[in-house]
Image (tube, rainbow, N blue to C red; front, side, top):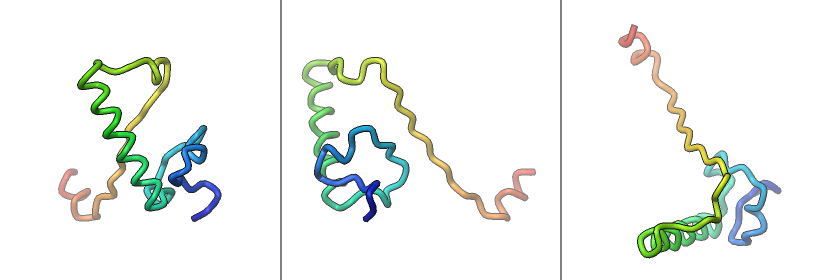
Length: 74
């Protein structure tokens, strides 16, 4: 992993852009799922909170299509 790795240490996530799963260490992935589980429980019990107010989140997925699929669509 390089200096842009997202690890189990939360400070490695501060101010970071998560662009690729290659940035995650196994421990970082475990932290991601743990926080997601905690947030899901918070939303269910309290409807959420203000931590992400005025923040922007984007989920972007790019899938490369094979040449055959592009030709069929034309």
